[in-house]
Length: 489
Image (cartoon, rainbow, N blue to C red; front, side):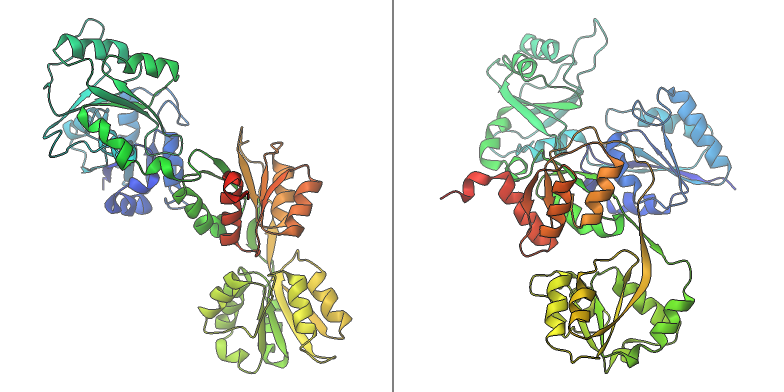
């Protein structure tokens, strides 16, 4: 039984511009064929067992001819695979998508087209330029700037808005041809590089000056040019460039399953996020010792959760044992911070204690002052943990039972990061692991003083530190670092 090929438009760069239908197909695909670096973040949505095949200039198999790409796809189809072919922008707008579809159609290979947001629409919108406007443009013309030598630019309307794809290399010639066709050299024009991404740049001029301004600004592909009076509206309608972290390259070192919300918030603020997890959360080798302790969890006076990773693991094991939150009915519960508290509440438990400074030392002092000597405390967590909590409790005569429910591991060798403006550390362990995995030493943003101290000892210059010691506060600290003048008296 043959499979089906889905040509999915991904938009020009921002991975959030893929359609719901495209993302749904990507998550189901057996094989994903991609061609752009901007697709890398989308590949995270593919099944872990899906085959990933890079075919573009920046893909794994650089230089594949169009025919070879088609044959590769056909072989996967004949194996019965569901194939998603990721195409930047829209599959049918100024790309090789139609040629691939024609090849498949001629061989009666099933396919489906999933439209995408094309570069002219998205890049112009992110630059604050509406392509149409009641007072300025009632029509839009899309043309390509990649013309064969000796080929004249097709006659285009001298009104409305003109969007020129693949514009950089032939921009002087294209602008000259527009003037020859009768366009006023004073017509406003803009060139948008890397539209919809944190690397977005643009220059604004006129048909007569844009090519020279682009040369002076050293603009490079990919870029789209917008010509027309609508360009003048960007001063009032710009929004993307106002994002406070636009263009800042930030390395996020948290474990991949923890980094999502943090990375998304940084992206929303305009940052270019480099996903570089330096720890992996892995199960302990044997569950029997863990289960033996959890069966008797009601015998403890208190249970302490110092990481949100611990909570779901403990409740999964309780469920495996035929138990639930009622097992903690007579047990007091403590957490290190609001993120762990929120995770615990989703399992129906409201904590009795939460550290004021959101550190294990502060939690230990708080509980030590509240529990009598001889009280029994269970502390489930990672195989690597700070000794400060146990130190405070033991000093007060409290008995502590540490229980390893997961392991913190360092990933293997990673593709090196060439440059970054900032690296973020949510624990001392992420700082140590990053230093072991990379020679890069960009300025660091740390979640608290313990992490900051570890980072400094490893050669990092700490420029931002959260207070309180939470991820939202870390983001606020990064914003203060980015705009330090706003905080000066």
